[in-house]
Amino acid sequence: MTAKNIEYCIKLTAAETAEKIASGELTAVQVTEAHLARIEAVDEKVHAFLHVDREGALAQARAVDEKRARGEKLGPLAGVPLALKDIFTTEGVPTTVGSKILEGWIPPYDATLTKRLKAADVVILGKTNMDEFAMGSSTENSAYGPTGNPWDLTRIPGGSGGGSSAALASFQAPLAIGTDTGGSIRQPAAVTGTVGVKPTYGAVSRYGMVAFSSSLDQGGPCARTVLDAALLHEVIAGHDPLDSTSIDEPVPPVVEAARNGSVAGMRVGVVKQFRGEGYQAGVIQRFDESVELLKELGAEIVELDCPSFDLALSAYYLIAPSECSSNLARFDGLRYGLRTGDDGSHSAEEVTSLTREAGFGAEVKRRVMLGTYALSSGYYDAYYGSAQKVRTLIKRDFDKAFEQVDVIVSPTTPTTAFAIGERADDPMAMYLADLCTIPTNLAGNAAMSLPCGLAPEDNLPVGLQIIAPVMKDDRLYKVGAAVEAAFVEKWGHPLLEEAPSL
Image 1 (tube, rainbow, N blue to C red):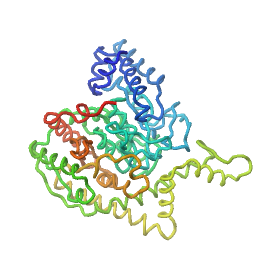
Image 2 (cartoon, one colour):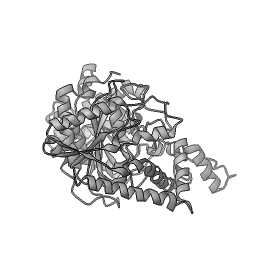
Image 3 (cartoon, rainbow, N blue to C red):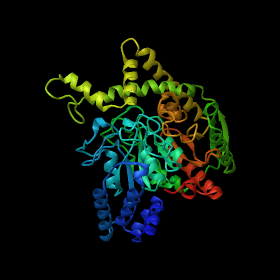
Image 4 (cartoon, helix red, strand yellow):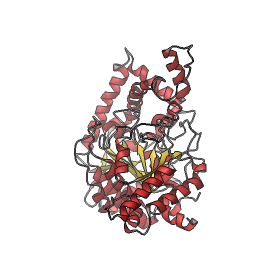
């Protein structure tokens, strides 16, 4: 393909790409080849992908073109390329979860989410880089090296799903999948100028998603526009009998909401706890402008006080490590993945210890030790039990807030993307990146981050977070689409218009 054709294909939205494939203006193979060429051209610098499945992607694309040639009806995302976070099992394709302990592991089955993507004829380009076992806010904790932010390759692309967000922002894929345990979809979206959605907990199956914190983890869609995210959301959501936490309810009408965005007559809450010390001036400026924009669009702004939100960070960093210490116990070096010290001179217990020492990174070890301590005899009630009580208080604050408003808005992150290495030796500073996103995970609500401009002091993207009640995910898209359209009309799309070229 010529450079001009590649540029044309990669700059299309997912919705536009699907329409052009369905009409025959483009073939799925052409679109896939264009994105594979883009990956080859720029990913050495960005490092968004851990594995590119070139042959598998082209085979999926050819299957879509054959369906169209036979006159079969194609789905709304048929032939559209996607970057898949390396936390979902994919049959015959490596799944490492960003860890050396699973280096080279080839799963024998597909996650439910992977199956649904394939059934919808979405073309999976490969697996994206991530913080090891999704533990981190910067993708610096990957055992395979950090990913760069396409806006400034010396800065982080967010975490834990920085590979997925960077793939979108560098036009290596129009769609991506992330997971969100404490903000790992929304925070990367905010710092890369993309759209990321954490659906209601249980709305997207976790079967085949390698577990970090089972009561918090949630897969979700990542894209460059609100409509594209809605189209992907509709593909991956829905009840799954293989997941005991899956919600057996119809998927909210997210695509319809994205196509008919409006905030007229809606009550929009602003929580006083989501601003103050530690927030970058440019982030607050863009957020305040977004609130004014919502007023102009016909929304009523309601001030909210949610005092338990100030305790969310502390509660999260007891609950998540406790659950991770339990979930990661299965990586023992005996059944699959890395095995170290199995030379006949060590016991099974010693092999397990040596394997974990070699296979787990520093952040994973830190959280496993913290979680194991919090769950230990004599400390369970004081730490884990107390954190769960705080979690209940946070949920009550949300319930009370949603009696007064339809959605809540806030900055997605307190700052723009920080420099790679800047917080590497300060875990607490790293954890503060998820200050605004964690309460939603603890309560199980739905939330979205979308671009709301660039911070004036560093010209880097700022994210606006929208939070909706449980199973009211369509409200995210209704509000998000209205805000996105207004921003584009006023200032242009911050990514499509202003992102620096690689």
